[in-house]
Amino acid sequence: MLILLFGHLLLVVRCLPKLNAPAGGWLQCTKGNLYGSECSFACHEGHTLNGSDRRICEKNPVTSVGFWTGNETKCERK
Image 1 (tube, rainbow, N blue to C red):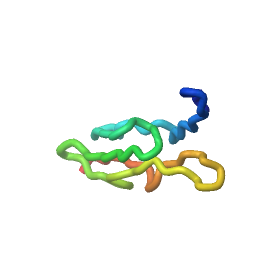
Image 2 (tube, one colour; image 1 turned 180 degrees about the vertical axis):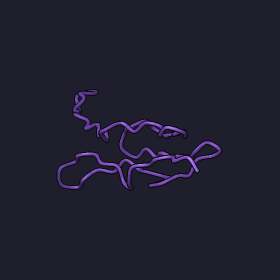
Image 3 (cartoon, rainbow, N blue to C red; image 1 turned 90 degrees about the horizontal axis):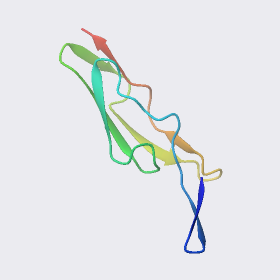
């Protein structure tokens, strides 16, 4: 997304899809799905975390397309 601000174009990089808390767990992100956001996952008691416990919104240096590091996170019942 390009935004015109004070006569300058700014590129806003978002990572898609926007991450959601896994069933049986929670998610906390520093900047939502914006570039640089760090998202942490944890599971409720009685669940085991599978996948990444932390993901970061990065951008491709060539295309400036946003992407999430790590793998999909799931919380599975023990």
